[in-house]
Length: 596
Image 1 (cartoon, rainbow, N blue to C red):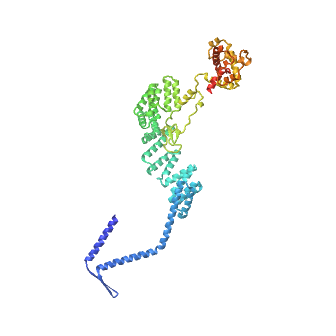
Image 2 (tube, rainbow, N blue to C red):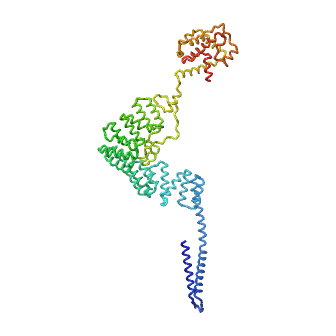
Image 3 (cartoon, helix red, strand yellow):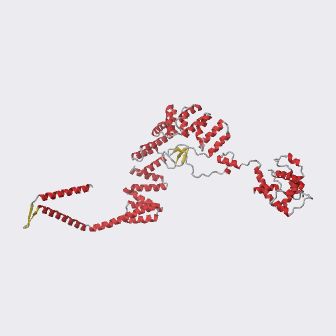
């Protein structure tokens, strides 16, 4: 818009100039080489302008003709450059898509056209990585590390190769060199900090944090948090050596990060030892309001040494009055159990003992049940629930669980990676089989208890009856005629015994009975029964098929039906005794057929 406006203004000026010349008449005479040329001023100006235009056009045409060989060469050169750039772009796309053969083809084309271009070397290195040619990869990155413009790229490639080969010393040296070249390189700063954290070189870690802060890689808040972790680690080491500097280091860490639990605990412990009870209490209260933790509650309860359990309970009540959540409930219940205040402990856990309480909640409820009422059954029930309860919070970093706080993650080397949280449970979990719980000392979970109760027989005789029926099944598989004859013998032997004996003896006496004697008699002596008719084929078919429970009708008179019925009932009672395999009569077969 501005250029158009400028052109318009210039056009107006030229038009105004010509108008002024037209309004100022005059003549122009030129004498040169005996010739005299006379014309008006306006015509002379127009001829001069035309002459200038012709000279400019002629000069431009001449220069264009003189520049044509170079122009043609430049056109071919630019075309070749475009072809190389296209091959380079296609090669990078092939590497990203995982097509190793196409990437190698494009890399060769780009190298033939572009020569030693840094992007060509990068494409060649990535193609070699895709092929798994680690020797070629290392060679290319070493060449790039020697060139100033690709030095950082080569160092990063060599660092990645050293990490892959688990060469920590070489990888650390490469990362430190990259930091010296450019402190703002993010990957190098993180790698150096990780290596220094793994070796617990706390002064060097502090310097690296300051470098990252000055290079704007981390903000001020993150730098303070990392410095607090370093100071807490130094305080813990000094405390283990009985060094007085532990208190100062812990206080500095607490000021930088009041939510850091280990720093607050160490500072409060030393303040208590120095007699500054109020200062210790304030430190713990400040951290508790931000991150409740059992260690804080324990330190707060023991701020004053020599206090009774009731005094500690009162102090814990004042701590958890404003905040605390489940950690406050656990701390209050623990203190109440120590003071034998069972009602207070139960009320503290009432809000968290429903649905699926944590394992520590179940353990505390078991202590309450046994301590308050002496109810070991209820205590074992809570312990059984604890087996399957959700996990308790713990110090966790990158899936690693530690009993105590650690400044560095052993998995990734991250500084300050441990957090107080519930560990992640496995996605797939196999329920243990109920049969695997055989030891009486093992406390199963709720579902295991239900399974055990369902498998328990209703009476102590039932399992033996099942075994006995199985024995009967194996013994009954005999010819039908033999079964009918043995049934007649058993019934007749039972008839010889007086009925009063059966009425006097209960059905639960297993071993000594008339049935046992009958079995022996029928096994050793032949049965003498002249009145009994031999069993016919029709009777055999009837015994084995339709009416197996009425063998007494074979060869018996009608007036003995009532007595035979009672004898069969009494014989079936003795046939089901747990210690007696029972007779091979049809009364023992009937329930077996029903079972089948």
